[in-house]
Image 1 (cartoon, rainbow, N blue to C red):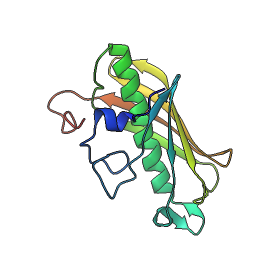
Image 2: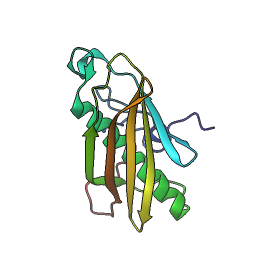
Image 3: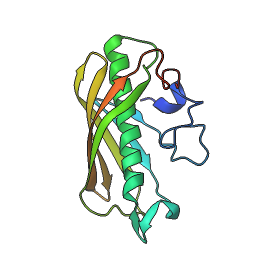
Image 4: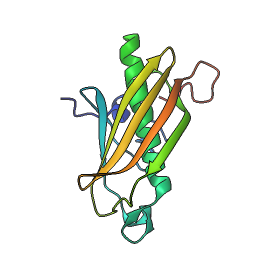
Length: 154
């Protein structure tokens, strides 16, 4: 089982707010391939709260967006039999906040590619806290080509 996150292995200089290892003020999630999905854990802090005891919905959106993006790039990398992941960006994503997400729990993020074609992946993801799904996401993530501002971000 891999003990180095996808972010640390392939994008150690990335400054993305959600997943960049080089952003000291970011969320700095660490995503790991586990079978047919990508998994991460996140420990919210008080400054991530919307109100006492509940994680802010925007923070949940950022977590789901970045984690899903890494599931997409990992799947595209494997499908292309490449040594490095393509740089991918979010084309769209839709988050459903199902219930308040407790800020005193370790959050488990799970993402799975449900459709892969050409340069894009459709990903379904979720946040789980204390054994309950608190938020879900479905999004489209696209590998960008040279000339796009995010092309060399990994």
